[in-house]
Length: 215
Ligand code: ADP
Ligand code: ADP
Ligand code: ZN
Image (cartoon, rainbow, N blue to C red):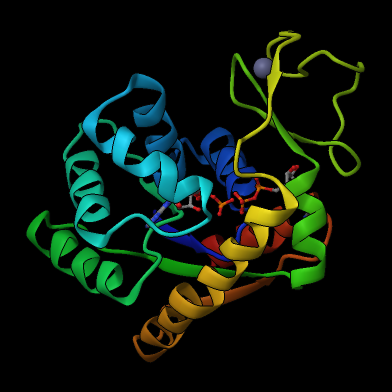
């Protein structure tokens, strides 16, 4: 299966992508994670992206399309993939179609995760991640079983993203509504768009996605 999880920042894309990795051995392709790795490694892309990400704006299409094109050429995608955070503009959506054509790949579904803006800020500001295995958590909604210890790997080191603060969230939500939400009709016209209620609890959202993928 090859799918896109589409939704605003904090909608639960990463959380659900990680579950699909576990349950279906699909591979999560998170352009946000790729950019954060580039920032950490101090590459040219990372140097250029850092300020833009901290401001809650979008990195340019050409850079993003290049990153995804290279990633799709890697040999680990035989069980499919979940695009998480890409495409985010109409230009990216159109370029993705061309890339998939050239690489002889076909998307199975585009799943929109719908969450109210008011809930998103709370989700993002409370978000943190295991520094060792990348498992995601939340101060209120998804706590580790043992306080301060990762359920998955036992690590006690966690990190929070520089851009997960109330001020940057505002710009990110604006960018979503202005630049990303307008691509929903593009997939609707192709009859590829499915929706899930992202306001439901995490297990319920997983069940809704499974239902779509098993149909
Ligand atoms: P995205 O990848 O779409 O930005 P995440 O998957 O990182 O979003 O989720 C944002 C935060 O909200 C995380 O801290 C996560 O634990 C929490 N979260 C994810 N899905 C839900 C849900 N259905 N209900 C409540 N909290 C959620
Ligand atoms: P979230 O799901 O919480 O919005 P991401 O991890 O997907 O966050 O993205 C973090 C930041 O990385 C975005 O705010 C943006 O600056 C940049 N970014 C990630 N993916 C893209 C993309 N496809 N196009 C442009 N910028 C991107
Ligand atoms: Zn861990």
